[in-house]
Length: 62
Length: 451
Image (tube, rainbow over all chains, first blue to last red):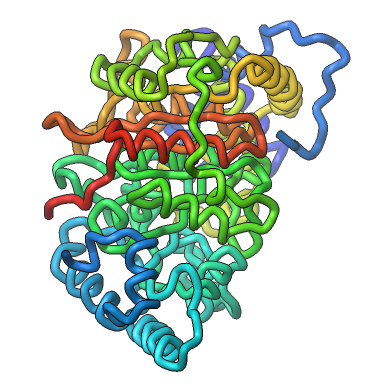
C-alpha cells in the first residue's frame, strides 16, 4: 500500500461513514481501487491553475 | 438485394412506391435476427408482434394513398434505456426489471415512429450505461458482428451491433463519454453524437445529467442525417448534405489524440484527413485533463443518481458498477467544483480552435475492437483496463458537448476503425456533410457484416 493509497483509504472510510454510504466487505478493494484511480485523475485537475474568474456554473451549456 | 442490406432512404422510397411492403421488410429483418442474434446478442426485448401491426398499418396507408413518412416501413430499434410504451425501461439493470412499464414512447422514439419507422425492440447496453464493453452481467455480452471473437464496445453496443449486423436499419443510443462513438467505431458503422442538449432526453433513463446525449447509428451518412433531422426541429442537415468541405478549414488533432493510438487507428485518421484534403494539425490543449475531468464528473453524478439504491439494494447491481458508483459518490466536492470550472476553460480552448477551423479530426478509439475477455490494453506504456481506456479520445470531446460524427473506415482485412469528425456546437450539418463526402468518395463505408 502506497502512502497515497493509505490516505485515500482513510478518506473513503471517513466519507462512507459521514455520508452514510456503507461499503460491503466484498466491495472494499474494488471501491478503493476505483477511488485511487479517481484520485489520480482529480490530481490532474487540482494541480492546474485556472484563472480565478472562471466559475463552476450549475448547468453546463456548450 | 435483401431488405436487410438496404438503406433507410432506399427502403422508405421502395415502400412508398409499393415495390416492397413494410411487412416484407419487417419479415426479412426478423428472419435475420432470429437466425443470428443468438450469437451477437444485441436485443434485450423483441417487440415483433407490435412491429407486425405497425408495418401492416404502414402498408394500409400506402394502399390508401397516404404518405407514411420519410421512414416508411424502416425497421429501427432503441437502446434499453429509451422508453418504449408497454415495456419497463431497464437501462441494462436488474433493479429496473420491476419498474412500471413506460406509458408512452420517449419523444425521440415517437418522432421516428411518426415518420413511419417500425420498432423491432430494445438493445443491450452496459448496466446503467456505465462502461465501454456491453458486457452486461444481467443480459450477457454483445459480440461484434464483424467478428464474434471481439467485443462490440459500449455502452450502446447493442445499438451499434444491430446496425452492423443488418438487424435494424437505424438505431438510437446514448453517449455520455463515448457510448455512441466507441461502439460505432468498433462495429464499423456511422454514429452521431449531436451537440449537448440538441435532442430531447425526455423518457431516456439518465446516467450523468450534465454529459448525457441521445444520438443514432446508421450504415450511411444520408440515413444518419435523416434520423438527425427527424429527431429534432431546430436544425435540418439534409438540405446541405452535398456541400463541399473546405479543406483549409479541416485539421487533425494532435497531442493527446495521437498518443496511445495504434498505427492502424492513426492511419485511419490520416486516410479521412486525406479524403477531406486536410493537411494541418492542431492541438486542443490539456485534453488529458479534460479526460480526467469527464471521468470525475461522471463518477460523481452517476454515484449521486444511484446513492439511495446503493444503500437499499446494493446486491442488485453488477459488483463492478456498484464499486465504481460508490467511489464516485464519495469524491470530495472540491474536485467536482474544479472539474466544472476546468470544463469552462477547456470549452474556451475549443472555441478558439473553431475560429480557425470548421472541422477537427480525431480517432474514436486507441485501438480496434479488443478480444472478448481481454481485460487490459497498453496506455502510456502500462497495462490499463479496457473498460475505462476505450474512451481516451471521446471523453474530452463530449466533456464540452461538441457534436461529433463517428465515421467507419472498413476493409483492408482489418477490423473497423472509427474517426471522429468534430464540429463547433450546433454545426452537426457540417460534420454530416463531411461524412457524406467521404462516403461518396469511397473513403469510408459501413457494409452489412457477413454473419
